[in-house]
Length: 538
Figure 1: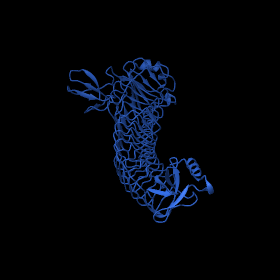
Figure 2 (figure 1 turned 120 degrees about the vertical axis):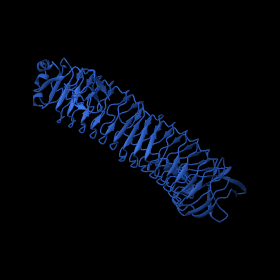
Figure 3 (figure 1 turned 180 degrees about the vertical axis):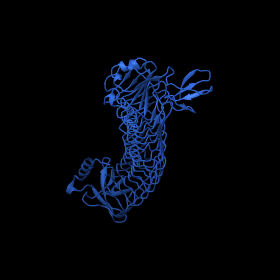
Figure 4 (figure 1 turned 180 degrees about the horizontal axis):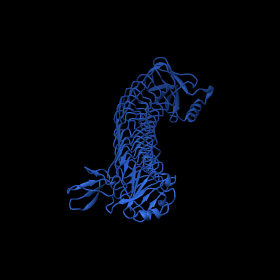
């Protein structure tokens, strides 16, 4: 947490201006015979407590502030604890503040490291920035109902604070107000609060329970960073913003749900939440500042129940093994799932019509994926580097397969190019070393350029090109296709290689014409006992 130190030093210097550098107007002994230093306020009608000088702590031991004093035959009421009044009084053990006080100033008790308890009078309406910052021995405190806001850094660094009561009147809690309160185990945020500001509860490492009110719309940067004992949290449906590293290192969280209302998520919002095993996202953020789940090493399952999946949503979430896309999903951005190296399972909802650029690039553990009828394009690099992919069927609705779409799919043994395809990019199946069969369903050879399928010359490839029956000569005469040394015309009008049958019952065949017992994922060919042949996609 970076403080505006320059501003604070200027305030201190301003307070010191006066005779001999002292900051006070008058000094009066209290009932214990201890000098208390005051400044005149409110047109010299009242007093505020201040300090002797900025060079040395002014107070120690047990201090009682009187409600009023008489000086030169005139009575004054003590109404304020001034800015920095007890700052760095490390030997201040206890203090009694009179009911006449209505305001506690900026850093009034900052670094009072021996102060273990304090009672704030009911008439206090204002508590300044950092008023109790680094009061490392303070164990409990009650904020009166008259206070409506908790300012920046007010209890920051109060590492012994175990209990605090926040009144319902509070409407705002400032930046880092409870940061570093490492002994605080639970806290209730009043219902009138609408924002959890930057670093508010950061470093509250013992905090295990907190309820965010329904009215909250904003969760700031680092708001709960380092709350490693927090084992569950509910993000309300009204939240629209989750800041950068908002829940960083909340290692006790095991699952999280992001509501539909969220429109902006900062970088690393759940960075290093190492206990997180599953997450559900209902929103389609319009702004994501890079990945939100980096280094969540145990995050295995992700459910995406949002209309649009942006490209940076899962960036860095390398441990994910399973992604569930609901039927709500209508679009997937380019590179949405790239580099998810442990992804083994994902479904493509029926409303998706295109696989974008680099969508699954380097998903090295993905072995199979179902592409449904209705998908019209497979973008550049869509499955680039999916080295474990062994099976994929391109549906008849696809018209475009982009450049390097299956580049480096080193375990893919076969691929179909349906008749619906009108355009192929360069290097579509380059570096697919295991591929032995390419099924091309066009009766008229598709016009393609050199290096369309791969970089080396076709004659150097051990690849069988399967084409429709009676079309072999056309392919052997067509530019580029003619360079393949092994072209066979064994695809029948049913869309598969020739098959034989040995009984009158319905029979199931895969795309290569092999007899199978049950429907498999992708294209299935059914030969019915009446002789009719039908295609079924599963």
